[in-house]
Length: 274
Image 1: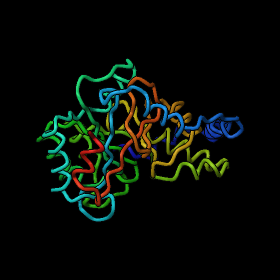
Image 2: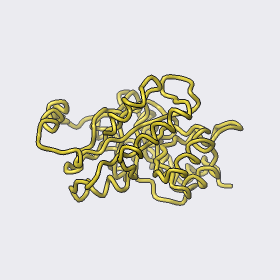
Image 3: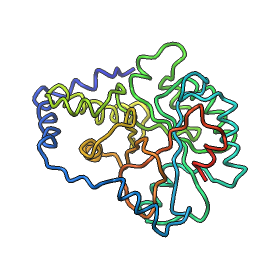
């Protein structure tokens, strides 16, 4: 079996320096950042219907332990409420196609994502999503797969999930805070950014034999410069934890997600999707 470390054999010291210097150009580039809150406020007050807006729900574990882990029954109730209230669950690929075409939907839709890569994704999420025919995207980071214990996801399990409508995408290599790495501004931190953003994508593509096109920022922390690095690495869209729906008639590269907490009532989660 190919080892992850072997991917680095072909990368010479000189090429690492070139990558680091390439990334480094963004450290000295003046960036003009629009006031996102003002832009979003203007969007919210414009004549845009719910058919133009697509919320993305973000979950983590399903063991009921911690502020971002739901008990399985609660997750099932929330999934069922979407169905009972006529809200269609769509894949991120379907959302992306409507954004590319600036085309509103003809019904209320929502996308569902999970981050990190807990074992419960295979034991609990997969059977639930399959039973309801829900397409779900799972963002995993490499270390969660390669350094896990007996009750961790493996490449084999990811293959099984991928074949059963759980789309596997990238959540970095080690789940590092990319903003902190970027702000260090050293050669080592720039190489680490290359590893977190670019090499993680290549590892997933190697083991899963598929194109990896989406990247979710660890902790939801990002910057304009980091989104540009992701764009240069070949991702089609990146995902934050900023709240608010995504407007399909605006070609945003960074998409928002509602982070669902265990303290949220089922009614609140339904209101996020409504």
